[in-house]
Amino acid sequence: PGVSLSGMAVGLFPHNFAALSRLAVRSSPLVSMATETSSCDYLVVGAGASGMSFVDTLLLHAPEPVSVTLLDKREQPGGHWNDAYDYVTLHQPARNYGVESTALEAFTQHPEKLASRDEILDYYRSLLSRWGEAGHRVSFVGGAAYDFGSASYVDASGSRVGVDASKVVDARYTENDLPLLVPPKFSVGDGVDLIPPNQLPARGAGEGRRYCVLGGGKTGQDAVLFLRQTLGVPLDRIAWVVPHLPWITARDPPSPLRQNTCIEFIASALEAHAAAGSPPSALSSSAFLQSAFAKLEEEGKVYRILPDDTPTKFMDATLNRREAELLRESAPSVIRGRGRVASLSSTGDLVFADGSELALPWANEGGRSAAELTTYVHCTAGAFNFGASAAEGRRPVFSSEGEITVQELFQFPGFCFNGAVVAWLECQRGLSLAQKNALCELPPPPEEGEAPPLGPVAGQVGPLSAGRLPLATPPLLQAPARTRPRCAHGARAPIGHPLLVSLRNLRRWYATPGMGEWLHGLRLFSLAMNGYSLAEGRALVEKNCDGLVEAGLLTPPEEERR
Image 1 (tube, rainbow, N blue to C red):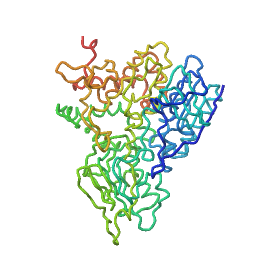
Image 2: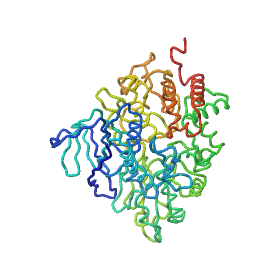
Image 3: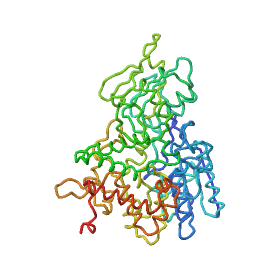
Image 4: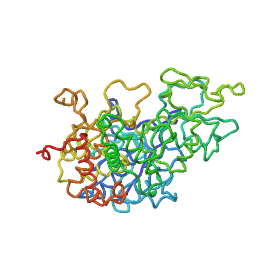
């Protein structure tokens, strides 16, 4: 028993973006024959937040000892944290991140328990040792290219190794898209200095250096804060392109250890809707969810960057009051209302998707073009676009072929939690495959049709009314829109808004013997983190369900309508 490790160097693309090749592939028709074969009970592909959480919970709750091969394209566990910029920290409390068995809080010195990149990587490395010391049979293979089609990987010596696994766990399906790895969707003129945020520390504030930050999400926010706080770049030397203003989760109230959760957010929306007189028109627009954000803003639980503009996106980026105020001070540098950038011209001008152009404020200063004066920072990858798996098609969490795909079952905060939930369900031998999948409703797939030229825009605050599914109906499993059953009026049966998917899943989990008790003892479960007892969690879920049924956003299950 114990943990063994092996690895190989990971190749880099030779461009501004030192992009790691996406080494896990679904099929490869031309592969060499495996020269040797290894065997295990579980092969887990992906040693990031989801994969590590899955393995940890599997080891804790499996009815019998299991052997695990944990394989990753990177040389060490930790997933995207290996590729993150040096100045990043976890922006949610460490108490709600990591794995079930081991507290991340013990690994960080940050006063708000916001673990740094290095602390998180140290935490994940330590888990390999802890699992071995506990007698678990876990073998970690780093820097390995796994091919799902041939069930094999290339090891450190370059040999192809076949894997005879009882079950294969795809834990890289929700891999983050990072600017270091994902090139921009816009074109870049010759001579333009475009960098990922990882290269900011090396650039410094040099005399006369200007910066244009592209992207308004958490990566863009971090870049602006780093420029202002650490490099000391004056505000008049920064331009910040923000196509869509985001709501920002406040890390302050009522303490750094408590965060608003998706289930509490639904409750806030229902309360705000009732306080406004329950206008029916709100249900078919963004007004229902925006009323919740307005209520949370009054309570000091969310922030906005520009005080007079209502944000239209939410991706749970989290800041404290001081950071939010610093971003507000940057308002004169914000370029918004123009949409997304389609190209950077060779002179450094911004060309937007609608064809309009904008010169930066310092263009032609001293007779030099903006391109000569400016470093452009690419923060537009869209972390939750999941580009690695976007083209693979949706599939059930548990397949009859013995493959398990860790996916998003529960919204903010979710990655580590979702990995643990899937592993716990896998350990329940009394549940059939169909029953496990019925407990794993998935959020809707992207709409069919041609993808936008500049890529998808995630996190739009829209209507909640896309989710008119019976409260207890199992999901219409992963059927593409063209094959989903039609409703009586001819429209495709909707799968449901991700918030409603989270609510329905939690209601099912509470109804599953033993699962509610496990959830409220799980450090990764957001309601448990916020101090809810099992009874209080169940009551909140039922109250939300009743309110949504009354509002017409959910229909009660058939047995409750009788």
